[in-house]
Image 1 (cartoon, one colour):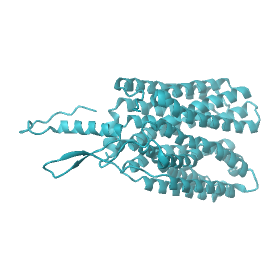
Image 2 (cartoon, one colour):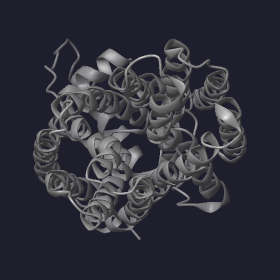
Image 3 (spheres, rainbow, N blue to C red):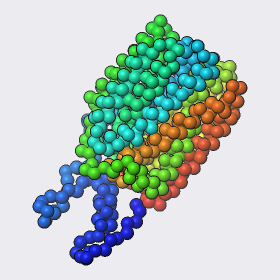
Length: 467
């Protein structure tokens, strides 16, 4: 919080200065955020009695709290879980559905469909976070669900070799829909949990890992069957529709929106003065730049080293299952050591495993990379939202802080995969993209480590939850 020059006026001894009022308000907001209590003014303007509002302590669960967790889990299953399953579509597009151009050209074009989709899902959070902070949770969920389902059904109508139809439906429409769902479904967990917030958010994040296991298996078996492209996508869209309808029925915000929310530009100016937040955002951008390399290229790497096609596909299933374990277990660990320490350690391990991909030659090496990267990548992803929630001063900032930081990370995801592909080249020089992705991920770890040092000085590095 920056310093405010005190304005002295006649009668300043009788009334608090403007700077004092601002400081008192910010301290009051922080206290409300940390204790779960709200102070409200009652009585006539002359008496201005201050009383405790009825916002009670966090329930730390309860039927509605865990129902909201379950609904948010399904949102992640349908949203980001579908985005990370794009590899199955890319393989089908290159080999079957878009064959007019050369394989390298189609592969490059399809890579942009996946990259743009992932960018919009995460980057659109800057708008979804603002909707959430202003109390429009239901609007974001309803509209996002509609656009996600609409995009999938429109994709089922796309004709062979019509790149623009696939790009607009899958890359843009599905991306916007999932982007509207992503942050609100995570941030609403903070209405029900404080002491167990990291654990609850980690369970929610595990939904995308389960989605990245189920969706590829379903798509891989239907696309290569007699159903054909259209019916296969419609079957997948039907599953997503049912899951989204169930999630809408389960989720419910508990708290009213804050009386005052800061507009985006002033909020960004305030966040830029928070060194811990700046280091964290820079770390998320750098880690995400290298993060997608194993997800997008491990299967191809295995195939190029003469491993069987079936194993090459299921190595991603192994990675995603390990990611599911990492996401859930990270919540229990972070309850003890704190989210910032957990995410920093996970980023360091991710960078080490990516660099180790240089040595991939055998089935054993691929399995080890899939297990270890999947576990630490899952832990890293699961702790993104809890760490950003820790940095918020009050409830009215959670959506905005997540949105701005995730938008920065989205740019990393947008440029990381194309850079890795360019470094790989037509000759498949595997050590070049591995060095690039591993180094940039390690740089992100260094930024997160700097954020930890700032939080240590503030006494917010390790959680202190009252029993």
